[in-house]
Image 1 (cartoon, helix red, strand yellow):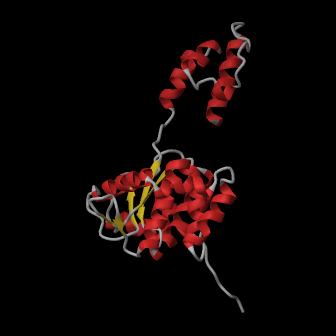
Image 2 (cartoon, one colour; image 1 turned 120 degrees about the horizontal axis):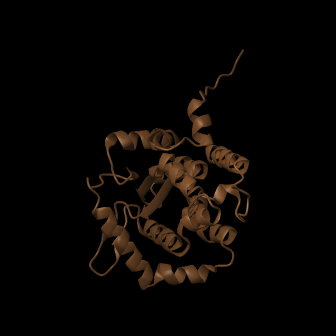
Image 3 (spheres, rainbow, N blue to C red; image 1 turned 60 degrees about the vertical axis):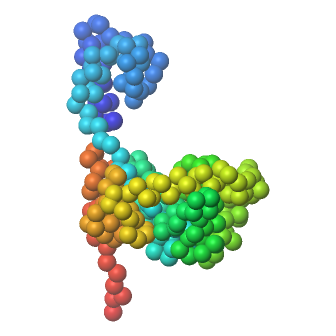
Length: 251
């Protein structure tokens, strides 16, 4: 945006010197090129067209996690990699959570989970949280997965981050037909993976999975997202990618 401000300041000064320009626009300079209507009202339509032609537009990096609520490796990745990276890089990445993993769906919309009935309940709670709150569910799920007991933490975590929603209200989804339908959708999405998932956590980057992407994500998702983003590097990427860390106990 610095380049835009310099560009528009130059245009304003130049036009003013020609006796053709004053500042009749009610919008700040940072918004002049946000829409065609604003640009026209501010008298900079042609300038914004030229500016936008030179401005690089980069898509965010999409990270999807297929996981189970009680899988130790899934919990570790979610808590130590996915959520911290998303907090730092949310301007350049999207995340998707799909709680299901290695579960099996029965014909009557019941599910058998790898780590037992408690995991099925954890999967269902997190699925209903995601349906109800969207990405606002991420802090609640982080709170659950970072606790010693995922299920015991669920209600207190909901109370911390969404006190306006009662536990009983959430349970209507978890115990009802809506929860079963949502879990069925997770099953369909998981079973449609190409290549088929072989383990969890199973990570896709921009819809793709490979051993290389999986290993890089598990090692440092932050570094992977920064390296894949095609736009101008954000401050966290610039600082984080350039830092060499070491740990010594000196004599």
